[in-house]
Image 1 (cartoon, rainbow, N blue to C red):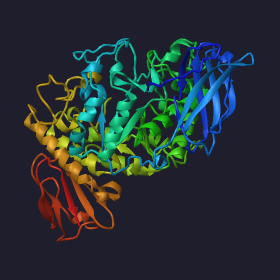
Image 2 (cartoon, rainbow, N blue to C red; image 1 turned 135 degrees about the vertical axis):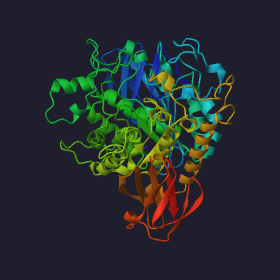
Image 3 (cartoon, rainbow, N blue to C red; image 1 turned 90 degrees about the vertical axis):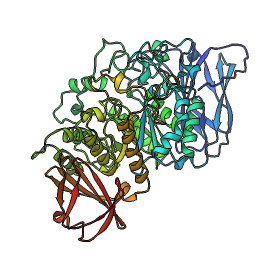
Length: 608
């Protein structure tokens, strides 16, 4: 965001480098605002505000002389406009900063977050489409374009995503989760976006804040919500404040030798844990290039909370995906989630907690009754345990506790969660091998995986390129997992959006997913219906989604030969002679003694 600081120069000029948030809004649920001002020796000045819009409550001087934190209350009857923050020294006014309070968009407080009716399309922006070649390299930024490098910047940008909204919409996706777009002015590997160097500015190689806003607006016009990837655990080593932190404890282990986190997430829940182990988990850094933020510092905490709310209000987001959810100070995560949900009661946030331990996933979700009394306001979590069960279940031979039983057992443990239906489910993402690779490029297992993810409980997410069988066979390199989407660059010989030079299997998979996504859009029974499942037997796993009006029968099938599925064991749900339609093949179905199954082929049968 380019914001203009207009100074009424009186007797002195001060180089103010940052005012954050750069502006705010009237009429917010929380009327308290803390403004961070960063400039040369700014702490030697005293701010005053004479306004009918706000009341200056207090001023805090940073431990660095170059910071002031100003607490103001935005009055309930304030009108949008500009206030002047006047700065005094020696009893005289020396200069003034104009700060804008904006009018909120109509209905901003009632923004609807994503839910089970949505399917997310996860995009790594640098690797999706290059819509504006003029921003491929920006003078003064550290890492240049290098499309030939696995971990280099390839040039994808916001304009490229906007240009492909028609494709995303036509495929049937109703939400877009974008890997981080904020500035990552790092020396290398800056393409992924997880080392923020400016929390209020889109990376210029992706576009501008206005471009991000345009993307959100154009997406909403199509009924597509945008989910922002936010990181409050760490920043980038080249963040501007790293040269001059406002406080001596702004960063964890700020003046101590580097210590990597132990990634032991159980230490946060363990009743027998040692303090030293827990401290390493919370205070350790991911990598040397990602300094670990100390949310126990109240100014850092407020800064991060306000920053998230600022982006929600500015963009009109449909959700946040919070990176590395358990790594920050956990009491802060309660404050952060509750502040957002208090401001936007219908919003949604999904946390990332990479573990196969369902108890750890459940611990962080709102309304969970925990052994240590911990609570939060987090609506959703990424269901990594279900993903891991899918990978094992599709590849293993069928057995007492293997194969499809992995899925059955994972869902059987839903009693652990406060709100299992609110979890986000996914076959893969940007940090793990693609699902087509996970199933050893077996198209039948791929189809079974997709059917499961689009019909079981929760909100599904698919990674870009899943629809055309993108793979990382033979490597687990993240640079390859996040390969370029075909057709996103003018020089590409193939184009996934038109089918040009895309192989037949990929086109068939694309059609398969498109058909299911567009069918799912109107299926409230899939979105919010109950789920009943039956113990897998002889290579099949059968479950039903149902409500008062409809029911849908899903059959996952790993049998390598055509077979008959006896239906008598499903009599508590099915009735003899019922008629339905198989969604994938569009074939009519009448319930009898058995159901003919084609080898390795899943089925979705809907009944009115």
